[in-house]
Length: 246
Image (cartoon, rainbow, N blue to C red; front, side):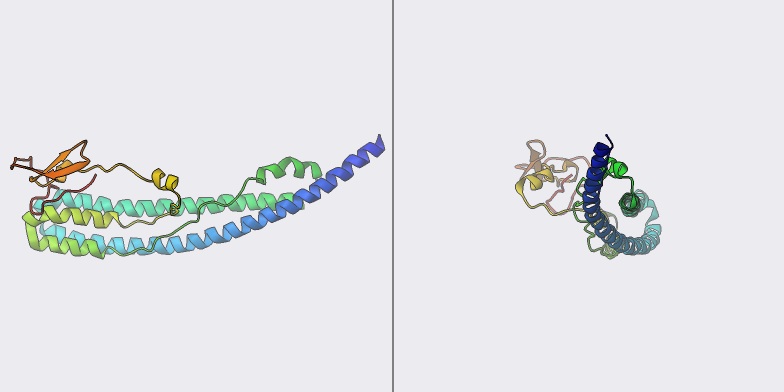
């Protein structure tokens, strides 16, 4: 009986040593991933700081101009503020997510370190399976950020052109502000990945010029054969014969 117990102990020790070597390799992957995440975090912090600084500058400039046009632009100013704050909140949210990921990885790394130092072979065998799952995930890509200069330019043009031109320029302001994003994405490579990120085209009838007619679920557009009246809408194009998507 003692010989049998001794044989089991030796077998467990051999198996434990083998698993510890595998865990050591896994820990190296954790180390590399932590290093990559910390590098991403530093870059993201710099990107967020630049975005917030530019957003603050754009906010101050926008406030000054909007105050001069206060009666007509009051509702648009509120939307302008929301656009800027949305980008800041999105950036802060990504920052918090990355910090949480790094905290969790460090905790797992600490658990691995304890397991590697453990002399309890049974404990090693019981817990090593929790580290067997693969670590690689899509790379964290931080897009190059530009400032809010285009927004400021659009607002300055809006001041000069006043009410009639405002209807056409507002859409450009909206799109410029919405383009200020920090992206975390992977580039699709195969057809199924492209299809996963695709969406059906939807035209916005509220922005269509009065000479345009939409059909087939707002997916096709044609020039009207005869002029028809359209209800007024602040985002409807009234100079260029065009429209936007939803």
